[in-house]
Image 1 (cartoon, one colour):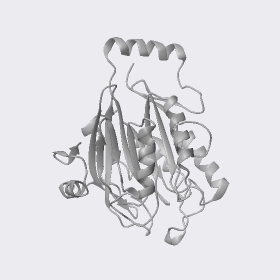
Image 2: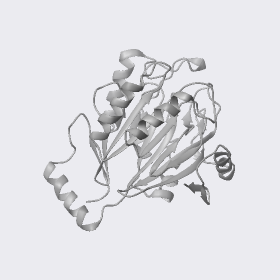
Image 3: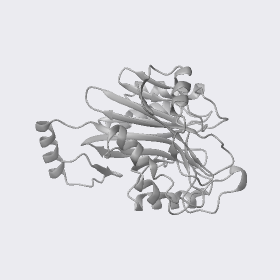
Length: 314
């Protein structure tokens, strides 16, 4: 069976148990391919999406292949009232889900400080828009674990918004539950505050909880700034992915990262791809000076980086 993505939502599989077992037996005989994923940071389209993520599939394909599954954080509901000036309330156009799908995104984190900008109605519109586009929402407040099949592995992707009142006990419970239901756990965290290259203390504590729960990949976003990347054995951490596209004067941060990983039973390979985020209606582009971004990551205390052209592995 090909390394396609099969989606489970609220316990309903997109393929039969018989087909899944048959695919698993074939994989055991032929050697299972790695599960390939990529991660971007903050996404906010505003009034128009307009093909602004078109460069991402090409960038990711060069590093981990065309079958990689994308995960991003979507700031603001879909299809609600227009965003307010100054970034007090954010919303995304109705075309946002289709644009995400075309870019190879399959999981959309919605746990962030703009999740409830338009109340219950905005939440409902967001879930309907994402699921209609066959996207899997994470962190939507429902009691289910978002699962995607990537190269026949069950991958759980969690999304949490960290606040000063976040309970470590609840986080530990959520992540342990997700890990029990999957072969691979990916944990994503959103923090707000002024742009900072260095992680906040509450993020550091949450990452430790995620690693204790068995996460293979941990990513963070929310301050709109990039942060160091780190490897702890087979665990990969991106402390700040920055922006992907963002249509709000509330952020002027152009430096961003895509994190690509290839996970199998024995190892996690990780790569960073510097990007120039699309602000104010512009598309995301390859970084104009990727070497400078990679140097920044190194200066922030990242794990040793091996540079190859416009990317780096660690």
